[in-house]
Length: 68
Image 1 (spheres, rainbow, N blue to C red):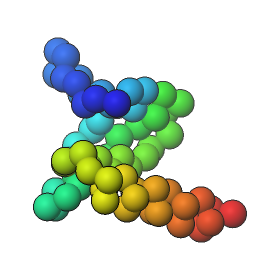
Image 2: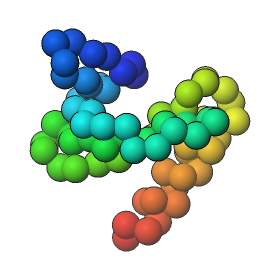
Image 3: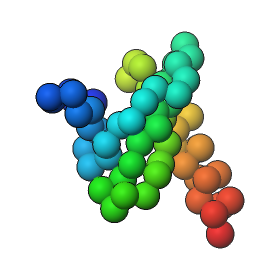
Image 4: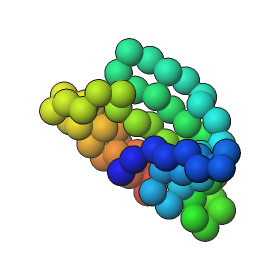
């Protein structure tokens, strides 16, 4: 997965990035839309690390539990 910029359109895989919402020491959060047009938030690790991956996986698990 890579954040790219072409002709003013920013994309991350199948997501269209609209704007940066927040930037912390470890992560950046973007407002985006999915390929289906559904609004989403993308949280991207600023540096690749095992700790960042564990953190994101745990957040994904929690989000899935909350959406039941």
